[in-house]
Image 1 (cartoon, helix red, strand yellow):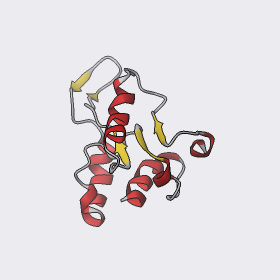
Image 2: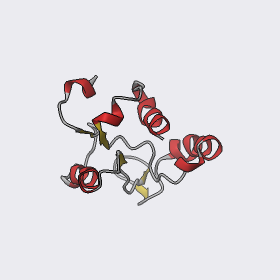
Image 3: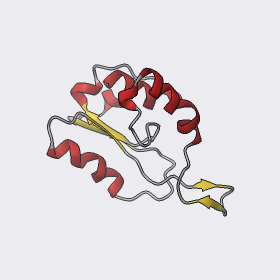
Image 4: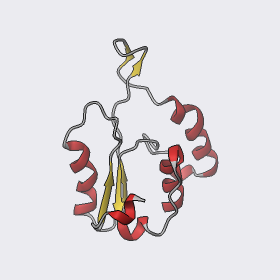
Length: 120
């Protein structure tokens, strides 16, 4: 719904639960779109720590078990060109309106995967 409420030619979404939000989350996504007209869609990626609980980090990277166990095997099998994405389920992404208006938006946790497949 937000796509049709926003007015810009470039639309950017950020997850609302980011604990360490920083301006680089915005300019890191906008930069490629502003400097290269051939780029139509950008996904964020970053370190995903593996946490035991709120106080204990087991490893500084390697998090994202849903990606590793579910999505990556599906992409490898059915969409091999998408298998190189580091964090396909990141909730931070931006794209050109003219591209985003041509693809359906799934709701809930399927939105990131649906956008990647449909834009690809």
